[in-house]
Length: 368
Image (cartoon, rainbow, N blue to C red; front, side, top):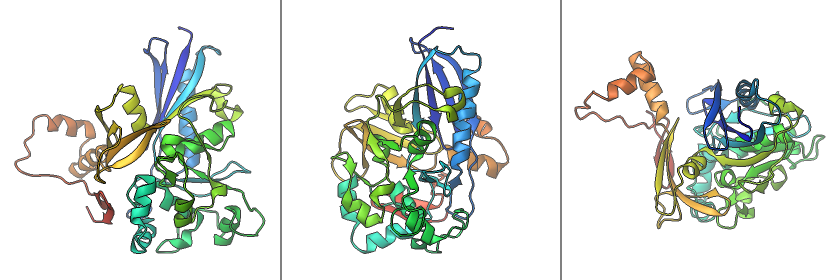
């Protein structure tokens, strides 16, 4: 097996996939491990941070089995975006569920901010419409579940209570003050594997807490969403020396992490898109993205990587719609794909508004 290998790890919504790539760009090995998704209530989408980490370790171990130590020079990550994670920085253990990017439980927080006239300011600073898809409202709910419409039942915090959460996030005086850390999935994985609390700038731009043009956390947005700066990770570039994986990483131990991107951003980069080029990716949801800004508020403004801005439109349910349709018809997604090659719609259109009806100004709850 050739030396100078790079391990690419794609941590997605439903699975973690690993590719071992040689210096010529050829895929030498590949492996994957599933990640469970839970739907405890309508509009709620949860995962377990420990299970996400376990899927990364399992897929990596399978991909690296039998590969000589020293053959792999670096690890790069692409990750699902917007999903919100909270953990105890002292124990390294999750302090609640991962709220998936599709999760809508924080819609009330967004509607409250909108009613107070804050939507325009949020959009101007973050480049994103006020919407519970992005991490900010989810993080507010995780840190202060009483801000939700039902007091946050089902948080999964081990019964510690809201006072402990407030103290641990730096907003109270109880023992444990300052213990909580928050982030997106890339931030959680980097902390769990390297011990460093950091977030890649493109992923940070999808939290709705970043000043998208300045590339730093916005004090105004932190204040609006009630997020203490003490719980946030350090913002880092998309590539460089991002940490060395420790013993918790199993087969990954000792390897340097040299690149991190959000999954849609990684696809844009991998396609070699230049100014004016547009890429569309299809997964659980879909992303249509191009480098540069566009006029108006029809699409989001985000950080593609490092200091490069991009315009993006999002479709919340694409592959997920196929899976739903397959279950509805009692078949498989593969069979649905085959049927689609020959079937005619006869004027029937399926609008995948599963839980919400998205529009440029935000989302309005709808039933599918």
